Image (cartoon, helix red, strand yellow):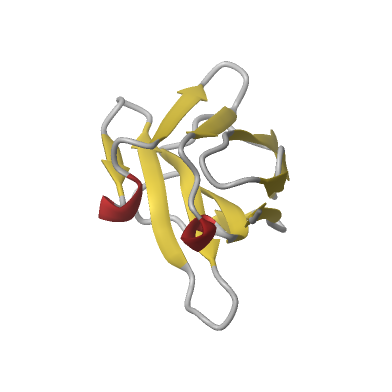
Length: 117
């Protein structure tokens, strides 16, 4: 059983920054994929950024150049540095982890990010 715990959400003004963190715990040997999805009110959950164990990174087009994903494999932690935030970045941000490419994904409970003046 793998648990994911997010932290770092909050209210920020447009143009501001936030940093999300997600720590994985439980019986874990290695985590193949760690990353972030988000869900805005009334919309479907969408990919924000993913990072594989080997360092391959994928970003949604909407966040390229503004968000940076990083991970510390020893600490089983993934981070999302969000800069130049826009109101459309508002939503619940979910941590995502897969132990292997074919494994069932694990999800955190979510961290609310609100971008508003």
